[in-house]
Length: 133
Image (cartoon, rainbow, N blue to C red; front, side, top):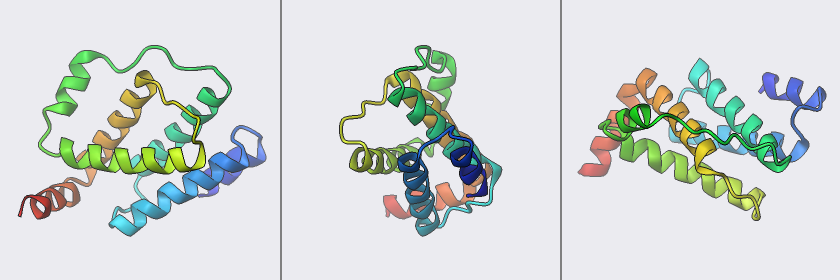
């Protein structure tokens, strides 16, 4: 969380976003995800910056390309990573009820989840198998 404290101290993110990032990280820890992984930091950093862009009306208009999105959607762990993504979106809605995350930003957040699933494949696959049982 040191990275996010620095972003907060530099006025790049605000206190509400800092709090939300802490909540998302806690949710990941409770799920058993190793939050020391670089991909977790990347996901949380992208989320923090995306939230600030959206709140400042500086929205990313171009999303992930269709080919990359298709690769992600065809992954065997896609249902699991989308479940994590939806849990994260629920936390965002609880903190920012009027905030709408555009599909362009969603696509990059999903790409970050996919990246995380690649480095923690055993975790995502084992949870997928548990959900199928």
